Length: 286
Image 1 (cartoon, rainbow, N blue to C red):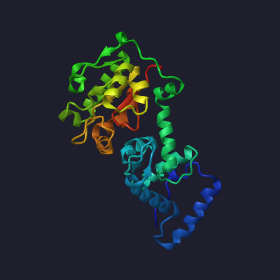
Image 2 (image 1 turned 30 degrees about the horizontal axis):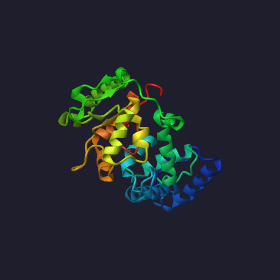
Image 3 (image 1 turned 120 degrees about the vertical axis):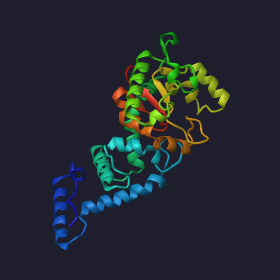
Image 4 (image 1 turned 135 degrees about the horizontal axis):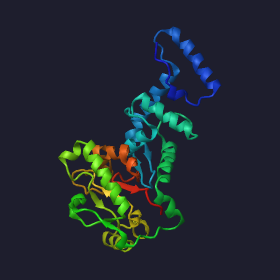
């Protein structure tokens, strides 16, 4: 006989739904090895998640993407699952998250589920909320602290708000203590971008011919002095901030990014999901 359905799957179910499932199980039990409905439901959802991980076509950030593998670590963290995407336990946790957020609990990652999850992630970014009202004013540069050269990728001179730099320093120390990969590559978790003035962003926009509309030039979160771009590795032949899907996927599979997903909140940092290297500190109001 198959195993009983998990408590995650039943969470929040109506008495009628629970009774129906109990009836199905009662019928299935005497059949000797027949799979209970809940197990079959989750097994099907697991298979669809395994397929969608590389084949779901969607455009959550305005650009068509094939599969959601880049976002898998964030999704797993969000739903509280440590299981593989193709495991029924992952589908079980995803169904519970969907139910808790008013969605149909299919256990399958689809366009609507990801769109809502993205909204949840974006709401945790103070800059995303503040910039909807007006672009936050940059802090006086004289009030900013210099990032130590040892923590700068390539020795670049960078600035951050002092409290944000202190939080990053604590996070870096914890990462080095907890993550063996940092002992073999000291560049990991160093910064390659921090505060950027509006004028420097505008100049970069013109120089690179890549203004992303006017977003990069007119209102980047880097102007706040609370945003950091971390070196978390890079795919061969790509710079660490390349938004090419090959690089984004490579970074998201690395130990440093996965450590950030699981631990950055301890130090007040939240991610911008599209760019695995981009993190924002929530410790000061905008």
